[in-house]
Length: 137
Image 1: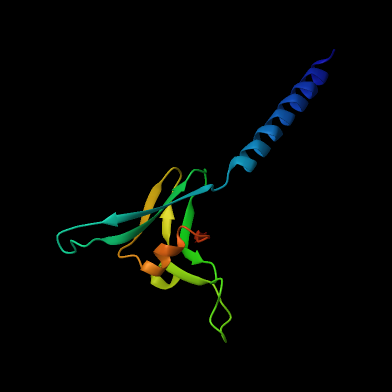
Image 2: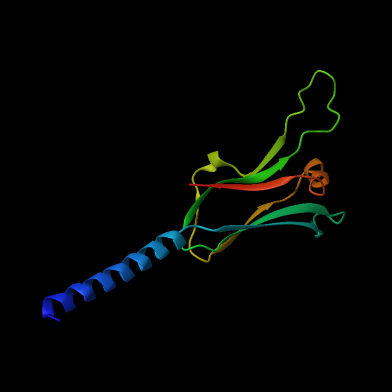
């Protein structure tokens, strides 16, 4: 076996390994967003009767950072809407898009978006089929 053949075989093996490693990194390199909706009943000195507080905990488990644009809750339309209405979904934007920018969430970072006080009509829907959502760029 000549020196050129050994170098060619070595180049083919290392090139193939490098391609496999790059493809694996490309497929893993994405943002994986985890949501944890939390609702709590808070009592303090200002409001001894208590109030409902809603928290959306957003965690970036991925390797790429994200920019959070919008977060909120979507309630399903009512089962028996009043006559003359369409029965659309109700949406509560906790972190609205037009609030002046976005929130940066880096690799492994966790943030909490808090709605205090939380509206009772949305609190009733949490046990139903309400959807917690975030939108990123």
